Length: 213
Image 1 (tube, rainbow, N blue to C red):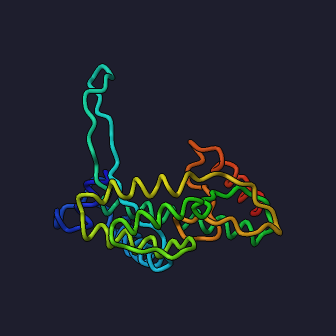
Image 2 (cartoon, rainbow, N blue to C red):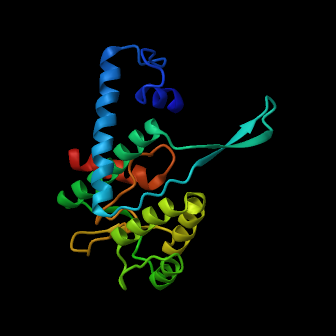
């Protein structure tokens, strides 16, 4: 019910809480999470994290299970709450396991090897990037480009993502150099919030369990 919760948080359905939020305590908790998420997002942006905002696509099926349409869903306020808290947890898990002296898997996005291509791209659009990879500078360029030409913002983000390259999982052990996530502008990041569908997350949960024991 992301859309319903987003409308409620945005005040579009004043006085009408979505199903499940009629309990005052749960509603207050969600509003608190929304506030914290906005703080976390502001902090990430200040640290230079890249704010990709591509809409999500969803398949529509008929009663027989056949795909009949593809719809685009924008990322709304409730989605952002979950996203920001998830990112905060993943970062906290990596730093906590490192502090506990436990080897673990990290999700790594290395500084772009094709940074020169990104510099050329920025120059072609009237911008400028420093000679060395800098997520903060890239983030500011993307924000300025989106403001100047909103219609091309999604296409530009896709191009930048391809030039940055895919992330990978790396084993991190005590004494290793920091394994950074360039797009998030953080030194330590682990996938840990989806152990039901991603094996590295299950490994992270098992590492946390070992620390607690």
